[in-house]
Length: 411
Picture 1 (tube, rainbow, N blue to C red):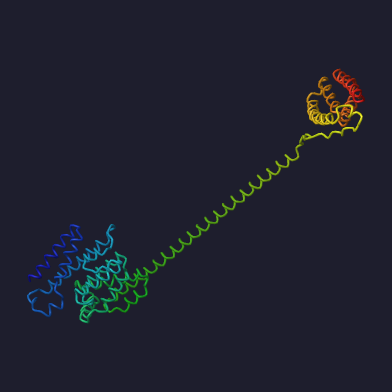
Picture 2 (picture 1 turned 90 degrees about the horizontal axis):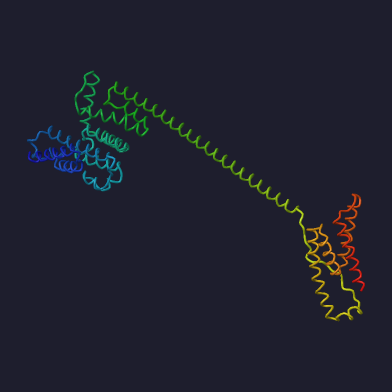
């Protein structure tokens, strides 16, 4: 009795911390209460619990395990809580339970089975609580294993008791038996939540159809619910497929439009580049076609007449060298004089100087050029009337200069 009082004290402590939302402290107190609970087989083998009310003990056992599952579900479903070895240690589990929620729920179910000395002896209401926890933690695979293991290891006495209650249901009388209601709740969660969550509708229908614990009316209701759930799931799946196809089509259209835009930009850039090259080529051709005024780098001069008598009478070899240097200077002067004459053709003085430079250089080509220019001017002006007065003066001076040059050349 003292041990049972200690278990109740730990349970009350854990319940108080749970209501105060101190879940870690509540989990520690609850695990202590579970470890002090007597095993079901120990009650029958020893005389220490002869004065203990079995129903009160089982009610306390159920309450402690219910609080244990609720603390775990609440703690693990919090957004800021992660599954760590420290959390598993709070619930008396091994560190390997921290690998995943499936592993955590599986080890918790094993601990619960040990507390009831076998999976088939677990209270059906606790089985329902485990299924709710698997649904919240998205561990439906473990939920299916829990139900199938519990149902497969259920004792014959338990099956007979539940079958008798089910017979009363078929006769029209409603049952208030918590054990039977807990069993039906576990079956209902298994058929309507666990198996549909795994897209296994055929197994759900078969389980309901061949289950002797379910009344015919309940069977029809469950099978109809399963079929409707399957149709709804099929429509949702088809809708998701169509949405996915639509998204893929839109993505494909967007990709094609982007490719077309890039191709258009590429073609436009190529056209602009070709146009720029064409404009550049045309500009280069126009520059090549422009007339270029090329100035002669040098003027070929006539060879010096080989007059031995004149050369010897002059200055000999020194005079010849001086004469060659003079010819070079005269050629440069001739080029400059031609340019000056082109710039100011109306100046008689400029014309006279230019002619003198030509004769001073002694260039026959220059004299011939001068005669050609005079002939051209005469042809152009001969048919238009009288010459202008400046031109007459220039020609007069030019004729006088030619005469003087002829005399000098003759001497």
